[in-house]
Length: 92
Image 1: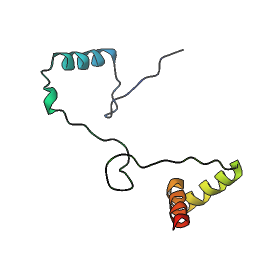
Image 2: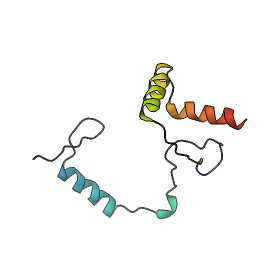
Image 3: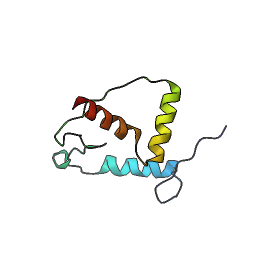
Image 4: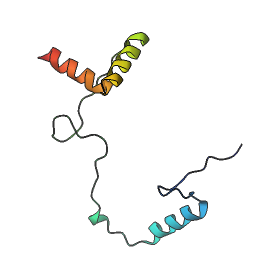
């Protein structure tokens, strides 16, 4: 069984030698920890403020999920956006 190959964004293969070179570069770099800034990853909050938006989880029958996915895709929408809209409407 062969190992899975990985590639850089430019399409070249990631080699063990390249990984070692990167590790050496960072190990030997004079990095001032005071200049590092945290970077937030993921979607922005729905409130526009700081922190995370609350999440909920619901269970539905498989056929309902498939119909909802199909309709959302047909409308060019994400299922999470549809669910969010329905909950907002219900909450008033």
